[in-house]
Image (tube, rainbow, N blue to C red; front, top):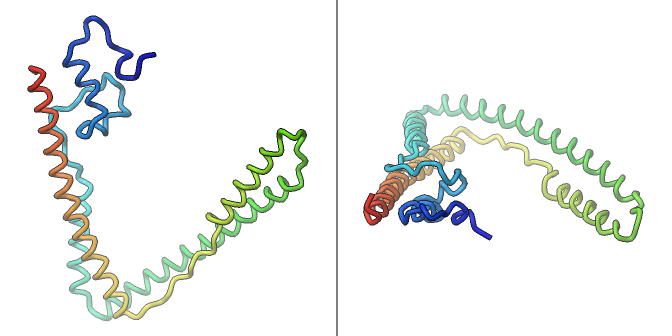
Length: 194
């Protein structure tokens, strides 16, 4: 039986056609593996703008935090705390409702009598799935803690500096990866006389 790479091979299939098709399974083209086999392979791989844009936002946030007065820090932390408290209350209510829903269904499954011996495994599996979901997904979230302005600013600055470093490295890595992928496909095409 042919594979996804050999299914379209005919007497007219060239080495270049086959090589480019198979190249989709390798590093430079791995992101094309889920694309249709006849989707074009680019000559140049563009750099993702995610880290570049995120870096600009992170640097702006860091600059803002570095000039934040204690009064402004206090106002910002109270605003964040109020938002976090609302999120906590909403999440806690949703988790409690979800837990109750799963527990109601679990009670029904537990009293359900499997119609045959071969259905007992299904019942056990259903119970296990519900219990696992309750255990791992229906937790009581931790309420937010109100910090001092000094604590909040120190943590915010630390987080902003980490974000700047992370996105700066990500942007450099993305640029290098795009250049490597472009060189790889150019070298492949050159070796195939294209």
